[in-house]
Image 1 (tube, helix red, strand yellow):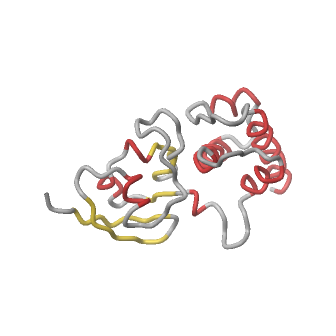
Image 2 (cartoon, one colour):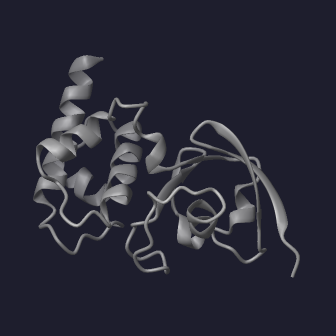
Length: 159
């Protein structure tokens, strides 16, 4: 089977790579693109560990074919921080210890950012609903939800 050439943008940078027609976007990110922050939890779209954005829309990278990224803007966890400056969500997750083993953390952060971009003033119920597609086997979710709510409040205050 011959490889396909894909031209896309990842975290604002143009990229090109070769992939098998059946390769997932998760495979492409972790393989030829060398971006290992996006994690594989289940491989079936049930856990959210591989959450990325495609043109601003949250998707599971394990369910997307890499060739489908052609011409689109892909956002990954590596694009959240700006150099050494963490995104406010990343900083708040650290401050509030809203993580443990780290497998779900990139997906939780990507889903949280997507939620706050659509709804900068979510209720606790809206945060829980927005993160419902992301499973964590280590925490009770409370610290994660609180970190998102506090970040939202701080970001609104800074605006």
